Image 1 (cartoon, chains in turn purple, cyan):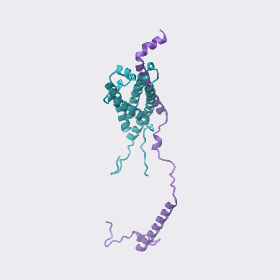
Image 2 (cartoon, helix red, strand yellow):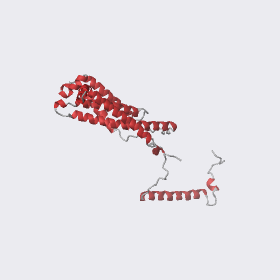
Image 3 (cartoon, chains in turn blue, orange):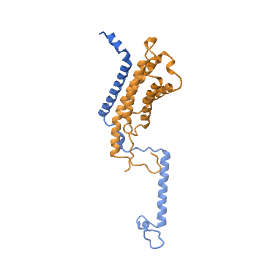
Image 4 (cartoon, one colour):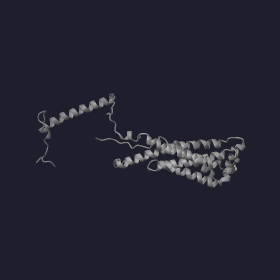
Amino acid sequence: MSFSAILDILEPWKAVLASGLGMLAAASGIVGGVIKQRWVPDTTAPNQVPATRAATLRLDAADRDLIGDAREAATELTHAIRNLTGATEDNTEALNRRPSGGGGGRR
Amino acid sequence: MRSIRSVPTVFTPSRDLEWHCAGTDALLALVLALPGRTFSTGPIWDRFASVMPEEHWALLIGSIALVRIAALTINGHWRRTPLLRALTALLGAGLHAYLATLFYMPTLGAFGTGAAFSAALAISDVRSSFRAGRDIVVAGRVFAMMRAAPPAPLPRGFAS
């Protein structure tokens, strides 16, 4: 039987054969994808591991001004609290003193 | 120490190729399902008509397209969607190879644009099946990890 005769026999089935070949190629693709992904290290891991290096925070001039203002405000607030409570550097008890009307217990 | 854990996604960075094939199939099915006899517009459809009626072609192609669109829409929220995507890509590759062969009519004296387009879609589906095959493994890993360490629930007022 010649090759052309085989082609003649397959003529009515060539669409089905092409479809089968297409599905076979796709099935090979699925198997190939599964094998490749199993062979490759877990790609989900890097998303799960926290960064080992500390993140660098970049500040611009406006941020530095804001932080400086906040620091000054905190210093002034500390002085104000000390003035109000009479606390000194050596007397921290006054800072713990509660301005209670009577009894002074913890509520 | 607080840490923010990002939820990993599936491997495939983009499923545009699968959306494209599914959309093309859906439109083809719609055109065949609309009123009017598409198969009577030219001899290119003769071989399609000899296989089955126009409505059956619309039903077959539309069903595959809808399953693909459903799998792509669910997109990882169910563990088996990559498998469903792979199977529908496999069906799509078979379907488009079949259509390419039917569109190829050397007796008309030309290769035929339909054959070329369908062959391109078949190759795209083979490629999509490879990518979906990779996602099957990744989805298995992701879901196993999420079962082992489920993410903390979002605070009240934050939609998931």
